[in-house]
Image (cartoon, helix red, strand yellow):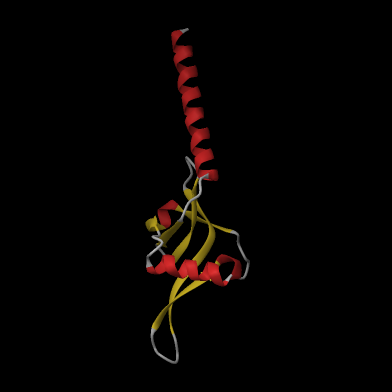
Length: 122
């Protein structure tokens, strides 16, 4: 009888923690996260992490590229929104084993400023 009570408590606590985790990750406002993958891609988007999942989801995302302008031969930061891709995804799912680095984007960083400029021009 005691073992059943302990099991019920453990399952209940685990369930409660999972629900709180899901609610926090679903509704908490977040800034942008930068993700570098094993194929050399650099993505920026709003991160969503599901508990016990081997994947992350990026919403409102961009592929970040450095391009050279023909006139000045300078390297310029280029944000390609997911919505401009051929299939126009709203989200991108990335398997965790394909992630090299992941971190928050600062508002005053070069990427943060480029994102703010994009939002203004939208």
